[in-house]
Every structure is written in structure tokens, then in C-alpha cells.
Image (cartoon, rainbow over all chains, first blue to last red; front, side, top):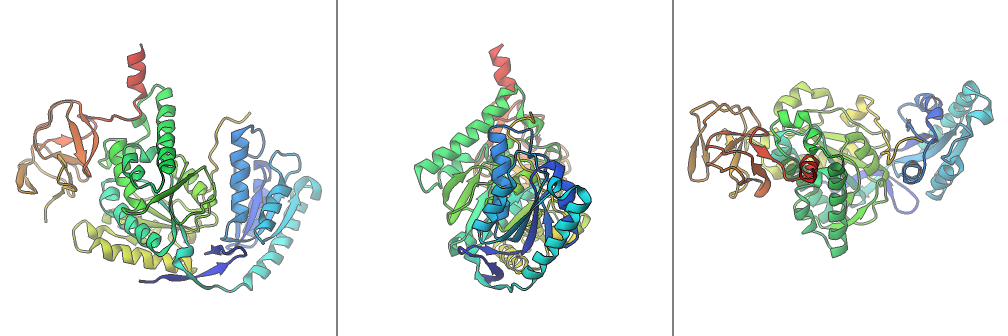
Amino acid sequence: MTQAFLGYKRPGGQVGVRNHVLVVPTVICAAVVAERIAAAIAPIGAALPHLAGCGQIGPDLSVTHDTLAAYTRHPNVGAVIVVALGCEQVVAQYLADCARQAGKDARIVSIQGEGGTVRATARGIEIARELAVTLGRVEREWCPASSLVLSVKCGGSDYTSGLASNPVVGRVADTLVDMGGSVVLGEIAEIMGAEHLLAARASTPAAAAHLLRLVNRVEAEAMALGLDIRGTQPSPGNIRGGLTTIEEKSLGATHKAGQRTRLEEVVPYAGRITKPGLTVMDTPGLDVESVTGMVGGGAQVVLFTTGLGTPTGNPIAPVIKITGNARTAETMADNTDIDVSAVLTHAESFESAAARVFEDMCEVASGRPAAAERLGHREFAIHRRNATI
Amino acid sequence: MNPAIVISAEDNVATALEALEVGQTIQAGDATVQVAETIPRGHKVALLAIRAGAVIVKYGSPIGHASSDIAAGAHVHTHNVSSERGRGDLAQAGAR
């Protein structure tokens, strides 16, 4: 089996699978300018348009700040342009400093400072072209698969997710962790009903206790609303697809984190993943918010299983779609990277399907675009902890 | 090929890989179960009679409990299975 890929070696030992010029708006008011700057150097340019950056307080502001900072440090990013308005809460200088501490060239363009949209966009594009030329000279080098932090995610689940695609991805997770790599699982609500299985695999009592605390918190939040969580978990599409309860969905969903990976640590939203083995991240179940957080934590690549099919991508990380539903592989062919439905009819073994997925993951990590990248899917949404003030 | 899949030996439901019609039989271990009502593809069928309140088991773990008696071969879904988790509606009803 392939155990290496061609990646970008970063200062500090991290490895990137992409080499983007990241264009970060500090605040929603700077998002359009940031998007225009990134578009001028597509596909190397990647903007992070988001809805916040001002009108925030407490933990909500911290999560926005920390998530944007995490992206500026990310190994899939080669250089950073921070686009500020000039009067917002998120601090442009802080984001630029984070990027520089990670060894990246970082510049700031201020819309108020440059004197409006037209001048700021022009200045940003000028800088972007300069950075793109520099990054274009960087060569990929062979890197061990163990340098990957793999995010595992499922969305648009149906009965095939728990029976086929999640167990296949779970075998990939087991293999990667055996090699010394890292795997991150999010979506605490979708661990509800399967937490006993993950907690039993925790490497420390503290990690198990942390996981159980998080699941209890999410359940308590749902209970506090006085509603049945079945209004959203499983989703209406999940229920049509045959999933009856959140317990059933969770038991199928956690398969994708492997069968023998040890739970090493539980980290906050977009918190840095530092340990080989399995990390659980505190993310909501909404696909884009969840992927945004796990990539922020350092995942360079996402294996995303789906039964019904879904387009979700990410601005800086390839999101590889794997389905166990043969019909979806046909009807959503443009969004689908890998069809593993043959394991359901025993026409292919789980081991063979997992080997194909691992191989594909290494090829995508080496530069081949995933379907979501070819289609321009760059969804990005930072989890909000409280309402805008 | 068996038209339904049983994941774990402890399970009392199977998942239909294709739509199942009344009278069709499915194999679950040594037992043969006759399908009692139409089961859509991907949905679950009871492998034995399940009494109201009894635990529904899939993947070898509980996924909820029967909210009414379920006959062998019957469709097992939201109409006859209740979840144990995130039930703020029940918590509120109990508090009243």
C-alpha cells in the first residue's frame, strides 16, 4: 500500500497538501474585496468569506478569532493576505502575526487605509500576484502518510453510510493511525448513542471523561429547548433514507473513526490537533461548520462519506466524497469521488475498498483535485456560540 | 444474495438492501423471517416479535425502544420506535 504522498514541507515539520495564497477578511465588511483578490489568482487564491468579525462578544468572538488564526497557520496555506476594513473587532495584525510565526509571508490590506474598494482590491491583487509567483516556485516533496491529519466526516447519510462507506473509511483511519498519522472526528451530536464505544477506546480516563462531558452538554442543550432532537437528528432526509433514531445514526457514523484507533484527546472547535491517533473535536453537526472546524484544527484532507450525496468542499483542503449508495454514485456523479457500494453485495471486500480509498487519498494529497475542488466548492462557515450583539 | 443485512448476531432488526415485498423471506443466521409488510430500501425489518418497551438492537447496540408491539417481519421505523436520547419533549412533559 502507498505510504507516501507529494506534499509541501513547512517550517516546523508540518506538511501541506495544497499551497494556497489565503485571503482572509477580518470581518464580513471586507469579504467581497477578499473574494475578488483571491479570484484574481484562482485557483491558488483561496478566500475565507465569513459572516462575523464584529458585533461579537465573549466566547463567540474568541471562536471567530481563533478559527481565522488557525487557517492562517494551516500547512495547506503558503502565504496570507489579511483584508481589513479598519474599525472591526478581529485584529488584522494578530492574524498576520500568526501566519508569520508559522513561517509564512503575510501582508495586510486595509480598505479604509487604502481608500475604498477599488484601491484596496487593486493593491490586494498586486500583492496576491507577487505571492502567487513566489509560491509557484515551491516544489512538492515525498512525505510519509503519517504526516497527514485526516478529518473524517459524513453528511447526507442513509442506510448505506453505516453499512458501507463509514466502515470503509474507518479501515482507512485504522491504517493511517497504524502508520503514525492522526484522525479527527467532530459532530458531537452524532456521537450521542455511540459514546460508550469511543470512551472505551480512550487512552486516558481524562479523554474518556472529556468526551462524555461534551456529549452530555450537547444533549442538555437540546433538552433545554424542550423539544425532541429528532426534529434535526436524524434529519428528514436521514429518516426517509431509513435511519430511525440518533443512536442508530451515531453508531453508523462513528464507524468512520476506525475500530481500533485510540481516543487520545478532545479539543475545542478549530483547536490544534497535536497527537497521533484519534482526536475528537467539539463541532456541531452542520456539515460546513464541522469541516471548517476540523480543517482549522490542522486536517489537510477530509474523507467525507455520503449516502444521499452532497457537494460540500472547503477553501483550503480537499474534501473527498465517498458513497456506498450505487444510485447516488450515478445520480450525483459529478460530486462523487469514490463508489464503495460493491462492499454491500460482497462484490468487493472492505479491505480492498479501503485500500482504494487510501490510494486515492494519497493521490489527492499529491495534488490531483477532488471533485469538490473541480466544481469550485469552497464552503466555509465558522461556528457561532451566541447571537450577534 | 440475501435481500437484507443483519450486522451483528445480537440484532433484532435487519436492513433491507432492496425494497422487500410481503411474503418474501429473509435469512437471519439460522432463522428465516417472512416479510409482513412492504419495507422500503434501506429501512429496517423486525427479525422477531418485539414487545412494546423492548430495546431495538442494531450494530449490536441499542438504537431505541419499541413504542408499540412489533410483529416479526414488520417495518421498524419512527412510527414504532422511540429514541432515548435528546428527548427535551419528554423532559418538559415530565416537569409539568
